Amino acid sequence: MKQPKKAGAKKRKKNQVSVEKSEEAMIGGIIEGSPDAVGVAVLRLACGCRKMAAVDQEGEPASKVIIYRDNSLNVCDQCKEDNGAYIRVRESFIHWIEPPPAPERQEMIAGKVFGNVPTH
Image (cartoon, rainbow, N blue to C red):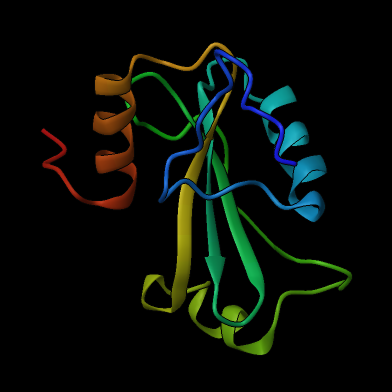
């Protein structure tokens, strides 16, 4: 017998990407070192490497870009060569710090970070 859904249960957006367990510590460290951050942009590359950086309220970088590969001392040779080229990104999202900005602000920040809106 199916349990009825609890009233007020949060519904996941269809296209929302969730943080992987292996990314949580890195995101936490980036947030801790970035007092102006409202979120962390995460880019998952086809090679398995990850690029991350904190973003501020205006969609500007709030930390340095960090590139790493799980369970590895170094990033892959391809990332060493092209610094994790955007063309090889297979997933990208922003992990928002609680409380997150308003949805309109989130959309503006994501557009600016991922290149979907003008930056002026």
